[in-house]
Length: 251
Length: 291
Image (cartoon, rainbow over all chains, first blue to last red; front, side, top):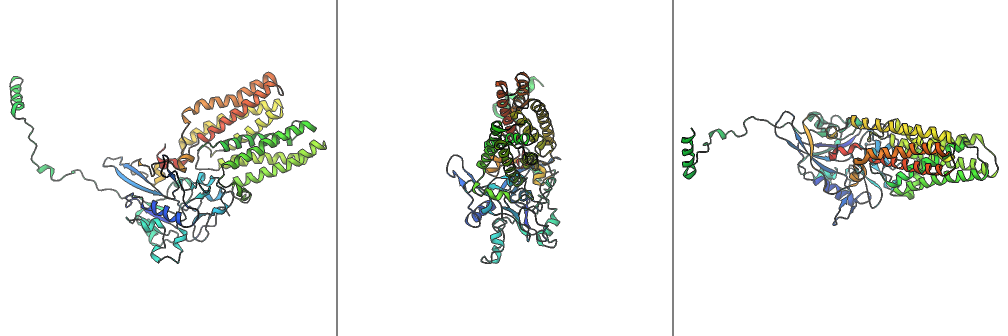
């Protein structure tokens, strides 16, 4: 049913640390791998070795450069983006078939692929560009928060978290219950001033992003520079003679 | 947004078809017998043809029946139900009119109302999207309804109604473009709000997440054609509204001039609908630093 359930007390989601992310795209690759081999239709690639390769990904890493307005060095921010599992998910309510739904128990937004007609309206309704249509199967694909990992008792406990979180070599991705204010990731959001994306769209996303910490600034870039011998810029040889001669003529 | 030909054909043709049904249901013109048959056949050809075209952009059209289930929240589902309801009601109304010469007034009014509702639900599919500021305005449903009424009136051959609604539709179209432009300019969403990196400095894209294209870029970050938007707007308003009005004033309905007016109007609405999609900017484009 595409009617949104009342807000759940458990709100599973991701917290992404923009200060730590190194932009290695490991989360992108592990996400593609897990979601191609497991739940749902595989994430298709079209023309993979040809002139116009394209593919479906549920997670993408953008890279931005921020130039501080008060001067100082520009900063690179790598920005992984996937479904934010919004509380007021506009992608769910627009679905004509009931394929899109939000789970009442933990707030995960999912697509029931066997009732998706592939109209694409949910992708239009999502402000974040988090949904992509599978070109081969004609159904909508999106982040499942690895619902087939996090509750999977066949996996060892340390693997029961989303593939992107499990694989991140920098520890920039965190998974947990953002509905519980005492949970580890809720406290992380609290401590670091985690933000919601596009608050003006009123989608109430669950996922949070931790802004990059301000960089140190200093007026003197190299403390040893003043102690170095100055470069001798008076020329010698023929040029030196010419320089001295010309200086005598035009003092 | 990507101006998908199947969606443009669908919205233009079904708009005309349902617009025609609106007029036929309330008895403008008072046709019976074979002339009624011709009118109803044309209306059904347009409406059903449009609906059929709409299934071409679906990934899995064989599951289309499921689209009738989510009317409580989804405008697309409401459109599906309203359109089928209209077609069933008007089929009974038309059958009685053509073969028995009986005008079932109540049924006709109800059918007209449902046809109007269908056009309204079609427009709401786009109007509801907060993610496309240009569409998210009351002008969008007004334009769709005005165009359906104008096109329907033109096809029925009720010249006076056609003249007025063509002028109204043209006016509404200009208003919608003007409001749309300002909504786009005043949209609060930017790369800064999209990334949550407000206030820390000026942000620009350093490298995109993928070297090739993808679904998001072809579907929602469509920028081709904006360059000629102003010229197309002028061409659209002239062929959609101006030229048909002139032709109707010269030749009235039923003749060659009227035929030309119909062709011109349909071409104009097609152009306007192409612009409706091609000019619409989705907020997700900010992630790709498309301003």
